[in-house]
Length: 221
Length: 221
DNA sequence: AGTACATAACTGACTGGTCAGTTATTTGAA
DNA sequence: TTCAAATAACTGACCAGTCAGTTATGTACT
Image (tube, rainbow over all chains, first blue to last red; front, top):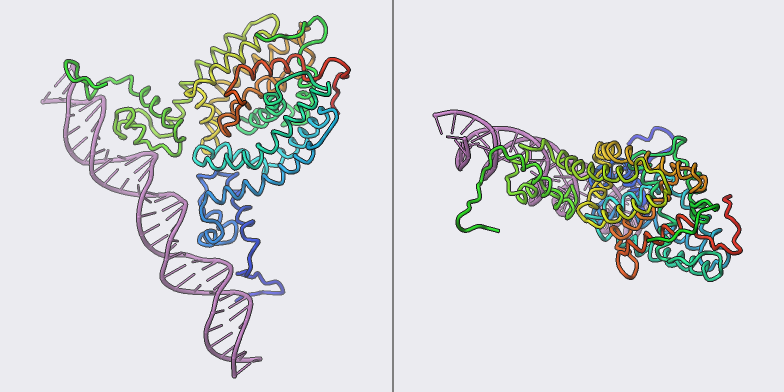
């Protein structure tokens, strides 16, 4: 009808392979803003420049959109993290430092941070989501870290700890830092400060909280 | 259960001060089971032995039920944790150990664990909930722990770390352990094992992950 | 080049069901 | 007899998913 000048906006695009990604982008924006339950499929459609019906040409249900979203965001990160740590032989503290810093960088991007938030939030009503995340990410990443720790112990870099449980000691503080900032808005006085957090955390993680002088080695129970 | 003979179950109870608590109990059960959004007010009423309308005699809205629930569960715990740690002067590692074990015990109770889960889940659609939790719990508990750490440093028990950030190093691993078990069903081979986790965590927290021999003190960056 | 048919891409009104909150009415304790 | 306590039927709004119809694009034939 009206194409004013040179450029025309095509209304249909045949072979529209880009569409699913556009829908996913729009959905992520809205899920971040209002959460899964509170965003209507029609809103997603609108933002993607489509009608509601068209969305259902690409995704069978609203949940499928969420699942697609998570899968798209997750898989590349998991493989990246894996490549850093796999087949590494040396001081595991170097890899742990690297991986944590990489993780922190990722978590600075709101669009990536949104994914774990969505998972945590929607799990009760959508268990397959957690199952997928576990299958695609955790079941791949955790064994690698575990092996890293085990090697570190065998080679005398680390004290003999439980490798499986120690994963929580490595990652937990970072997660809690993010969660506190996100959920309760609790940050250090100088802002999010994730780099300072990681430095502080690594110091404690590797060398312990106890003062070296006068403090006997700690024994639990 | 049902009494056939002498005693009769009064159908109305005037001045029913017990009612709000009964509604809260019922609501908690259902929120644990299906989450906030998916439980209907009528279900809550039914389980409390009331009609839907009656619930609205005691609570102005569904959200008010959630808020009441959280407040009722939270406040006693916060004060209890506080009394353990306040005005303590001595090796802070003892208190930290105690508080973590107490925390772990609490988190074993599904009805208590449900509260933070509900908060995390419902924050996006109900920010006052997070604000309340922060006001009533975190803003009271965190400064106490921070002071504990500061004292520990001053008295030579602990190395000089950032007290505010170190809170995450203390609590984070426990939280992550719980979260992993709850959300993804990931536990050690021998079950939830929170006690073993805490032992492993405290060892690392106080004495560090590094092997004492041959390993130079860790310096970040 | 123009015309006709084919089909992929898309639309938006509609349906069926759900559910928070309201209200007219009933119950029973005092 | 009175009235707070409780009920059950009702209202209004919402929204995921459907589908009959529309529009843009491709193709084949002349």
